[in-house]
Image 1 (cartoon, protein in one colour):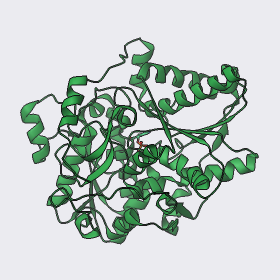
Image 2 (spheres, protein in one colour):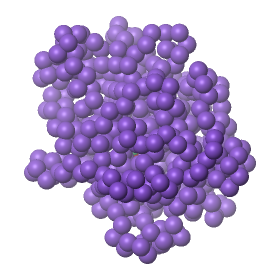
Image 3 (tube, protein in one colour):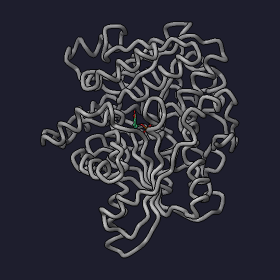
Image 4 (cartoon, helix red, strand yellow):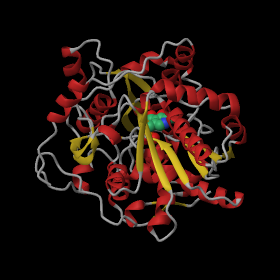
Length: 441
Ligand SMILES: Cc1ncc(COP(=O)(O)O)c(C=O)c1O
């Protein structure tokens, strides 16, 4: 198991744009972020050191499920009749069932080291909330989770899992915060969004001295924590005597995609060979393929700093499709920056096509993927079919970032033909984009 995380900031050809304070429009400093995060995580957020040591107590927890398996998908290859080799890195073996504990455990540990006993957070798919609830239980931290309403209703057992680990789970928008109350006053049946749930959790942390905030994606340190996935994959592929030509991951906020791909990109940026790196996102919430690269808020109530990223506008509410973890209006600034530098590619697919890919995967490899992970499965299958058309035997690696055992209602709906490929509302997108903050940088 790797002893260090990889920080891509050390190898970027051009540094990523600064994060701005919305009041002063000046770059934020560590003190601006101190009400929300412990200093150790703030320092990781701005670090340009290539390797950062994974603390031993964190590695000790990781040993419960890491290294995660790297599997050659022989049966899927056969089902597709492709000359390509398909490998997947399986993160569903973690206690919460996805990659999210890779950052929940260190985030909880650094908070505990700083004497913090309460953390507020949001969750879209319920995966991140379950992961932080698990990590909080390990290090004696009370965790409050604002779960996006549509996901809270679709997935009652995710809430039960969070409560089993000892967390409190609240449907968002809620009556517990000013941000939530303002949304409910306009629409009592609002389905919620990650942007709104983030506002609620940030508000709780910012207005309570004893509470910090934790984010399950988007931020530099979160992406860095996930690089353990790609670092392990490099070693495992070396053992298999193979090397990927294409690396595929799904993107909500960008963390599992960064986790599998940044270590490979790092090899390239330090003079190694070029590989294609493909981000797959939902067509109903297409920040990388249809969003604007601009400064925007990370949340709906505008409590966060401004980051330059691909965004659909912070007030954009994506339709309530089933990959709740991908319903975010923005994208990690680092992933957005790499897209602007043409170091990565992005594609978008609708949910029925992704579920079709997930069902084929389940029937060939046995694992039922999370609806979010189905986007990566679809991306990998498309690459394998391209190889078949072109008669090429390329090696494809994708991140199977979680299992779908809590998402079986979505699978039932898919099999009953009830899933709709929801387009987003063009008018709402235009309105959300017209409200982007004016930044001259
Ligand atoms: C299983 C799974 N995959 C992917 C995501 C999307 O997040 P990210 O893009 O940060 O990996 C989530 C988020 O909740 C998730 O639960």
